[in-house]
Length: 106
Image (tube, rainbow, N blue to C red; front, top):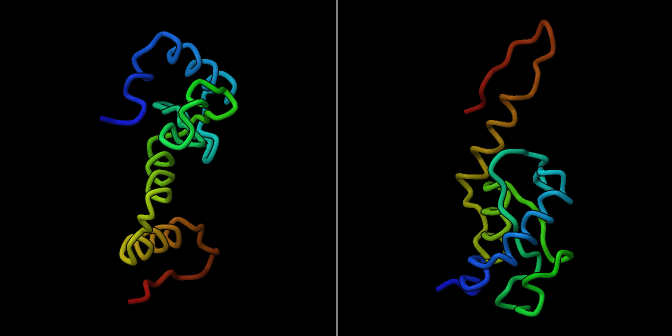
């Protein structure tokens, strides 16, 4: 059972969650994404159960940023393959200068 399982099903959590989302402008505080957001404990419930309902300990994150934060906290660094793909996609997304050809380095 998750450390905060009992907390997440209370009306108190529903209220504080809504306040955190509203405070953060209903956007991810890391990347600015809107849509389905999760409210994250900056300091985990496992480490600081007394801060479970502390608005100052909460932040709105999109699913991607929340997963990334959790992986960082758990010591799961991205693999070299993931880093290579992310770099390749970023390079392809960069606007080309007019008159130049883009080639892929293999």
